[in-house]
Image 1 (spheres, rainbow, N blue to C red):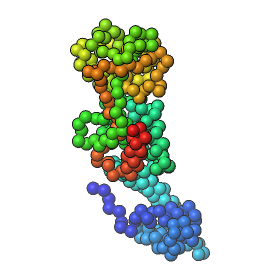
Image 2: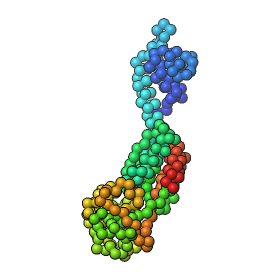
Image 3: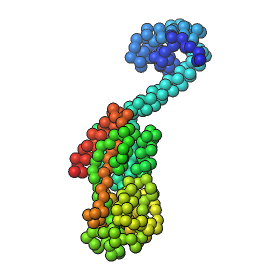
Image 4: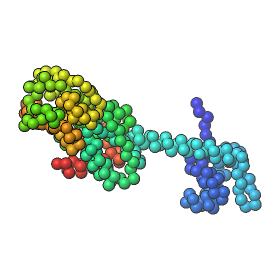
Amino acid sequence: MLPRIDEEITFRKLEILLAFMETGNLTRAAEQLGVSAVSVHRALHSLETGTRCKLFRLEGRNLQPNDAAHALADVARDVLRTMAEGIRSTRELAGYAADRIRIGSLYSLTSGTLPALVMELKLRKPDIQTELVLGSNEDLLRKLRDGAIDACLMGLPEGGSDIESQPLFEDDIFFAAPATSALAGRGEVDLGTCADERFVSLTEGFVTYSGFIDAFRMAGFTPTVVMRTGDIFSLMNLVGGGIGCTLLPGRVRGVLPAGVKLVPLSEKYRIRQQIAVSFLRSRERDPNLLALLAASRKVKAGLN
C-alpha cells in the first residue's frame, strides 16, 4: 500500500508553490494565479503543515525558500507534469482528444479525397494538428482498434459492431491495361476472355485486392499474377511499364501514368467499392471526430 499523503497537500497548492518559487514574491505569484496574496501565503503555510517541516524563513517582510522548499518544488514539477500527461492520455482513451487527430488512409485516396477532407476539418478546427498514416484496409482497421489512429478513410469495413462509418462515395472498378495493349482500345473488357493475360496486383489486405479476387472468381479462373506490390502508385507504374494488366478504382484516373488506360468491365463483372470515414463507436462523442464527421458530410455533398 502506498504511503498516505497529508490532505493539506493538493495539486493546487503545489501550483501555488511553483508560482511563488518562479516569481519570488507573494504579490506577483498571486497576480500570475489570479488569487490574493493572502491566499498564496496561506497555501504555502499549509504545505509546511502537510510536510511537517519548515519550507521558508522570514527575512524582513519577505519569505525566502529553504533547501526543503526547493526539493519539494522539484518534485512538484514532476508530479504536475505526470498528472497532466495522465489526464491527456485518459481523455484520449475515453475518446476526447485535444489538439491533434491521427487519420489513416488508403494510398489511392491521398490525391483528392483526403486533402479535401483535411481542408474541411481545418476550417472547423484551425488549430488541430493532423497526422497521416497510410496502409491497406486491413492495416488501418487493426490500427484503429489498437488506438494507433483516431479515424480512417478506407473501404467500408464489413461487419464489426464496434465500428461506426460515414459513407463518402462509391467507386467503379476498371480494367487497367498498358496503352500498347489491344485491350486498351476496347469499349469494355470481358474478364472471361482474359485467361491468357499476365496480371499485376496489390498485396492482400487492400480493398482493391479484394475486388480483384472477387472479379476473377466470377470470371471462373485464377489470373496469372507475375508481380505484387504494396501501394497503388507502384501498381499503376507496373501496368504502364507493360509488366501486366490489373484492376483499378476509377478515383485514380487523375494520377494515371501516360502509359495506362482504364477500360470499363463488361456488365457481369462490374464491381463497386464504397469508401467511408470510419472510427470506433466508443469514441463517437470525441469533439475532433464530430468535426471530422461534419467535414466528411461536406466533402460527400461536393463529390455527389
